[in-house]
Length: 405
Ligand code: HEM
Image (cartoon, rainbow, N blue to C red):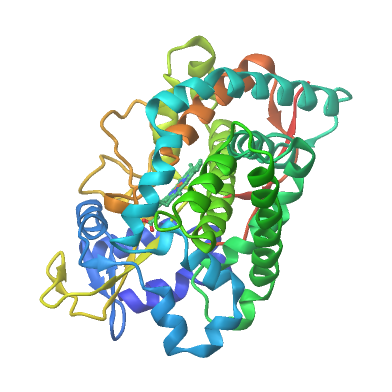
């Protein structure tokens, strides 16, 4: 199987539901491989890491793309996400990222821990109540979605009554992060982008009029006083990004983690007794079944290569994060789930200039939530057949039924 057929197979429902056998085939091709004209796959851990850290492998400039192809201008999901830090290059990227970064530094995240513990306790009460009669409860809806959405909304300043409406909208918007073959696939993402941008336009206006102690108020003030630091349009794009990036992925970390615990009761037992460290468990979930499987870059300089495979300017590089995390050259028996691994450093949060801003927060949420869940429900068990979302880039469950009694 060559690089092109691996990508083709990854884009089928079967490939998306279990990409790992395809990644194993990809490793047989080497650390990198061509995948048709103008595309290279970064497959190995070191190769993927090097691409992410090299600014000559940039994000595609969406504004230039929209100018070149006017059909794209009609797609609100493309233009909105394209203005966020996730898809900008220097110097705009650094200018805006530095404004957002302070909200997610070690001190701020540590200060959020008591609020996360309180939210976990409250949501576990809800789970206990819903499952009190022994009936299955959907863990994704009752817990995995709610915890991160509450945390990021608290930080942003989104009022409690608005929070639970975002699951469907975020799910729709993130279609725009998948490998799109037909622009028609973006319809739901565009509707969600319009709705989310409308929501934050109103919230920014409200916070400008009556500032509070939250991130929307802080950023809205900076945008008003110093629009050279962040424009109004950049503000909206990044608020939507923070909301969506703040829970879609963390929801999937919690869901993928619990599904793995059901397959590995010895790990659940170890977490309950303290023999398995929550931080190492979280690292191994991130490595073994990463909530983000793939990202892309565009070669913008001449003379580049990916692990020896030429990548002239204009080459698309598909960085297979999920494959890199299963690289047999980096991990002993990568196909085994083993929370005793140390120095794992999975690439699930990316690397280089775009390294995930929320990695500390996501890890902390998982490290608080998972032991608390296991402590609270000694008989926690699968309550039916889980369903995966049919996605490649953002990997997670749609439903994960559990019984708690
Ligand atoms: C398990 C949870 C998470 C995973 C696996 C994850 C993964 C990632 C990855 C792979 C990237 C880089 C994408 C690229 O280089 O193309 C990224 C960027 C980003 N993430 Fe996360 N993320 C998670 C949680 C969060 C949370 C909780 C937040 C916010 C509160 C967040 C905010 C961001 C932002 C703002 C960026 C863009 C950074 C930039 O481009 O400079 N993420 N994330």
